[in-house]
Amino acid sequence: MRPASYIVIAALAGFVGGNVLQLPELVDKVSSKFADNKSEPADFWSTPAIAGYGKIHFVNTPDYNPANTPGLSNKVVFQINRTEGDVRQPNLGLERVARVTNLYYAAGVPLNQLNFVVSINSDAVPAALNNEQFRKAYGTDNPNLKLIDELKQAGVKVTICDQSVAFHQLQRDWIDTRVTHTLSSGTTVASLQNEGYAFLML
Image (tube, rainbow, N blue to C red; front, side, top):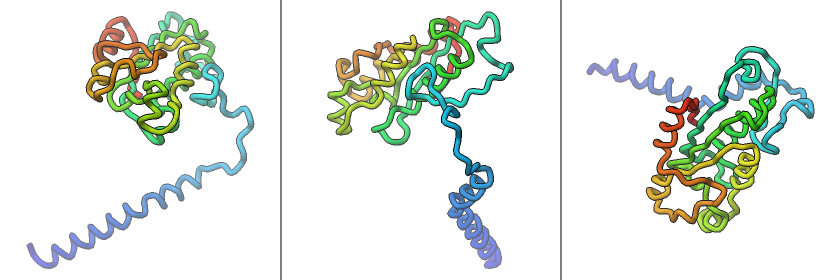
């Protein structure tokens, strides 16, 4: 390779590297262009079905509104397979389930007409630990249990994959009693899809 080629490659690498390093700053600049410095109204966000979780900004529009579409079964199976962010905060996947529940309810679908099942597996398993085991692992109470309670009160069934429990070398009785054990997440999702459930990976 000629020396001139090395110079071009080095210059290109420097340009790309420099711009990658500046990405956070560029994102901040772009975000500030769209940011509205006005404070949001007190009722801008709400949690109408799952108190305190999965906040939504509801806008009543007719397109794809589940309450306006006749014959919907409202059957959804959610699969949560990772832990994101601070483990001392509720699992973001469970928060998203709460958000979907809040949206359906705000759109006008009664909770008793929702058929929602959550399948926790893989790296999300700690979300289902009881307080004792969660404290041993992370030094704090499990922040997911109150959210799971709220989901259950709304009729959402929360389940755990026993294959993932075994893979992580956990005891079955370390899983909180609020959560239902299943053979596996894969068989749960596949069985429910065969029964007509929509699948959402969270």
